[in-house]
Each structure stands twice: as C-alpha cells, then as structure tokens.
Image 1 (tube, rainbow, N blue to C red):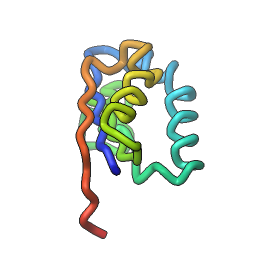
Image 2 (cartoon, helix red, strand yellow):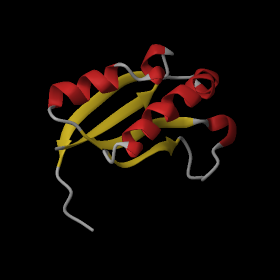
Image 3 (cartoon, rainbow, N blue to C red):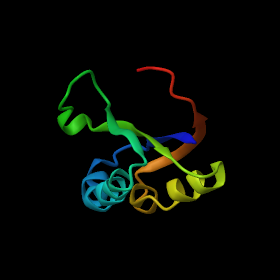
Length: 99
C-alpha cells in the first residue's frame, strides 16, 4: 500500500538539511530502485523553485510499504529526523486515484 510521509521542518534548519541531504536522498534512491517510490520532494518555504536562504517548510514522500508500522519505522529512521531537521513527521495511508 502507498503511504504519504510528510516531514515538517523546524526553524533555522537549512544548514542541517543541507548536511543530511545526501543520506536522505540515498534512502529515497533505494526506494526508487526497488520500485516503491511514487514521488518525493521538498516544499519551499516561499513561492519559488529555489527558495535560497528561506529554505524549506518540509518534505513529502509517497512510497509503498507493507504496513503503516513499516512506513512509520522508515520515516523515523530518516537522516532528517536524526539531524533535527524535521520537528514532526506525519505518516498516513494513501490511495492513488489519478493519473
């Protein structure tokens, strides 16, 4: 089943985000290589493709897991969590309707 994972950035975490980004992307690449990643990306803190020093308000990942518990465990092990980038993470089941 698909699960949407939403991470919400804390204040002034852009340096920590940049530092943890390679490890974060490696985990997403592994999901993609396994055919389990629907989409992933950051949410700019301002209305701009490149928010510069404004940074990001969080990230969204939609990926397949066998259970909600597995999705939560995967989210809890994210390098952004370990680095203190996300102040909270929400994991919910997701049902793709379109396209």
